[in-house]
Length: 182
Image (cartoon, rainbow, N blue to C red):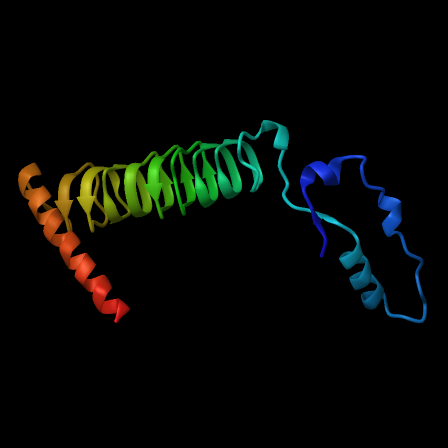
């Protein structure tokens, strides 16, 4: 298939009449339609490239700045490899997240900050590996918490003890990943 940059595809530089073909009754419709699909250029992405700033490879996204490979996104900045993210900054590998900043590999999240591997979380900050948490800060491996701070595996710690325990948990995680590699 021929794929054109949308600036060229939308311009007058090409003549669509060059791809016209007569119907041949000795061949099937499918054969002829397949040949037509291969000969007619397709557009690369759907977006208003006039509203994009340094965001060439985004699809169904308006307006974005410094983004790469986004689909169905809006008002994002410095985001990469994500789907259906809205009003986000510095997010990577996320889906269905809204009004969030500095998130990685998170899904179905709203208003989260500096967090990784979240699922279905709202107002969660500085956390990792959390599921169904609301208004939580500094949580690790937590599920179904509301308005909590300094929790690991749904158990509360002092801020100092949390940092110590977090280092232990991260070491365990690294060891586990090494085992899985072998």
